[in-house]
Amino acid sequence: MINFNENIELSAWGVTLRPWLSSDASLIVGSVVDSHTWRFTTEAISNTDEVAKYVDRALLDRSDKKRLSFAICLEGSEKIVGSSSFGNVSTKDNRIEIGWTWLAQEFHGKGLNNVVKYLMMKHGFEVFGVHRIEFKTDNSNPRACRALKKIGTQKEGVLRSHTLMHDGQYRDTAFFSVLDTEWDEVEVNLANLIENSNREYSFFTM
Image 1 (cartoon, rainbow, N blue to C red):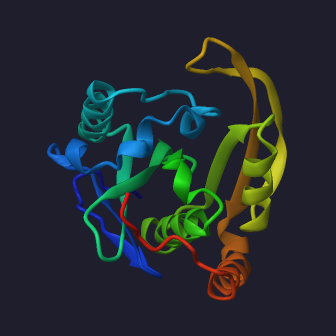
Image 2 (image 1 turned 120 degrees about the vertical axis):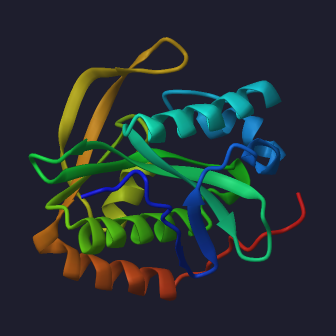
């Protein structure tokens, strides 16, 4: 299962996921404060002070063994364009969640999220050895729901008024998952999807 003290780095298709560092706030792309990035999330960043606090929370959660969060970088630049995490670890059930994911608005729909999910699922199943990986998203966000189905997850249901959002509203939360017995097929299909798609997330000057 997950070792929060291990400095894990995952990389493929020009994408690198690495642990957050205390000095990373200045490397996050400026567009992170765009409100569209946070429309369907449980927290939001609207200024540079909140960027620094976000990094601090990621480091604290790792120290407390609650969540292992990654900074997402692209080949050819040290800039950070997003984040995703392992969390909600259940050692007893051999289960983990992939979530807390955000990408700067200009990288939405570019194929980047598929690579992030592939790298994390591969590590979860093949290195952590988990039985189940689960995902949660806002059921009113059809784009996110379609994206999770596209990478091979199974939708399991919706919990009504489940999660308090940053704007004070409660969302209906849709649950998705992949099991270890499904991973071989999911991996092949997702790798083919990535290989055969136009990966349009190469870093460019912001």
